[in-house]
Length: 567
Image (tube, rainbow, N blue to C red):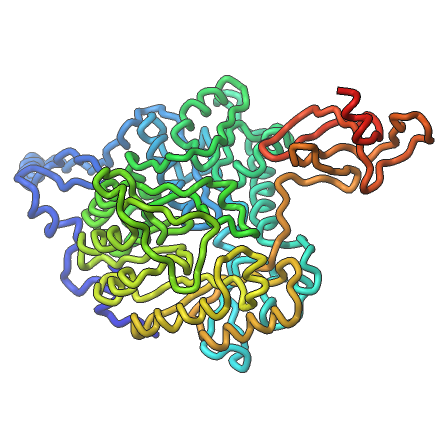
């Protein structure tokens, strides 16, 4: 459905003839004589007024050409940083946070890669770059009125229309979204390697940094592979970027991938990377506690924690003053928001889940919830559209649905990620609901918000998925008739990869141990040397460790009793 001119004007995309931008006269009426309106959290210096130009014209002198004020915290000769963002909206928000921190510490921003002293890539371990996303339209005979936007490999384009390799061979990882997302970064690093090599010796060496989820997941490999990357920073370590870059300036590699239980960057107002934009993302929470069996987010972004509502409202007001017409509230599980910053609300009872839904954790009492935040945000500017993503279907209490229905500036669009139409597969995914409970929620949403637009996520080829499971997903698409669907071919995830020449097992502490597959002596010296077989016990000398995996050198094959006696 096409938007009319009135709706486009509300979104800031069109202005009626003769209208002035919001950042002009309409906003200047709030300021005193000789003052300039406030934007991005700082006051611009007063420029020349009309009398200055008239005096200059009378004297036959040209008026001064306006100059942009220097960025706060930066000075002439400040190191220039170039930022590239890959993946989801959270990474866009993270880029703005990282830039706000660097700007405050004296860095300048450049859009020219050749000018940069520092190149930072904000990375993803799930999605390919937005530039490669493609729209997929299912045949009308299959799912009428459904547009499917594919964010993964060509293999996944037909996951719901045809029988594919992803579905029949669920263990395949060739061309999966994660590998394509990460391969895009490795390819980019090769380009930066060439840029480093041809950099003039008169200039300081180019520093390259990897930020975000890929940094958290592959920290060791990134640092050791070709020694190209100077800085690695996880999603909770952006405050440490100035120190990490200072260490890298001395020629050393620097990394901080510690996950935090409380970091929300609440005191940092992100600096929008696209000046003059009409839309913006506002991060309201970080991390996720749902622990779905296929998802890497809890391991790359940590546990759930929410920003204080006061800091969110401050940011939204600032965006409104800048003329932004649409704000999207962001979080990995955005509607489980729970602000614990105000003591008087810490004993509030936990809201109920959607009917038929459950969680892997106990209900969390206390705090201001998403419905309260959504109410407050929607009151700031009645001409600013409000969206939110990505929610979990379990967290849609009636007060949220009622608020969406009542407020004209809250978009009547909900993302309800189903992931599968099979109750058996949903159980394996640890989603916490059945197909029937999900459909009941869909009907309740449509009864509560007439005309609501629905979107969803689906994974095809999950471990153990059968033809019948797949057909149940197709039938769910037919029954719900989503407006948009995001389709992904399942990719097997391993905390640590091993090659075909390696074996792995688990120690007494249930920690995975990886070691080379080589000829081994028997500890009892009663048999010929041989390779370890499944079920053998192997004595391994541990030589390195990551957050989830040990690596070592095999010493010999043994038995439990001999191993215990040797300690």
